[in-house]
Length: 311
Image (cartoon, rainbow, N blue to C red; front, side, top):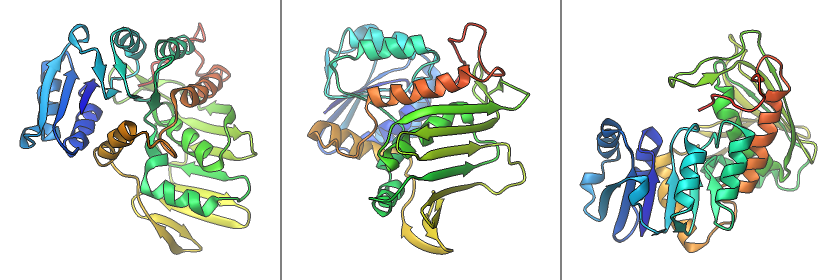
């Protein structure tokens, strides 16, 4: 198997950690211009302990023409440029792109155009974790969901798309609209230098009547994820399982990227794509709904309504 990883920071190295467990010989090419990031990624991934993994460092201009899997794990700012450049050079069985996909509607369209005709997915992976796969079986055939997330300090800009996607999958319905009410502070500096975040409340509305509410302003509240359907209320503890009525209903958890990557690559190669990651077109639809929500909030909308510094 031959894999390309573009961006070898925290996420890129965790992808490789999982790829090290693939059967047979795995050739991995890494594009990472920062020497320190590359060396740290090699150390974090533990790749040197796996003689079956052959690791090579590449540049965008020296990548090969064909790969089994391409992972683009950079931050959002350069992604559209990179995808355009790589897609002009590479054919792959499957592309996996990190979120947030881009920082503007314009760049979302550029990515979609660049990968037209190629298989591509976006890594909002809750739908392939043991917890949410098990929970979906409980919800089968039931009515609209009311999904509520209250987590003080939750990164709304960076991470809301994870839950916008998983609720779409759990409810089998696309998101129709995202309403955002930011607090008066507006944008503030995120942990990653050069990027921004915001606090407030987000409500996503889905075609089947389901809703997702995320509130990160509940300073004194205990973090919780609750899903109400019919007369039942489910508490999702992402490290343990799903509770109902105070009792553990089913076990499962949200696996780390390093635990998901092995199976992710194998499924792409084998064409096992049922209940897989969202396709690029699905995720772009979700991103656009989120971006329109940002546009419609006067506190968050940029002057030209086109670019957000979300990582």
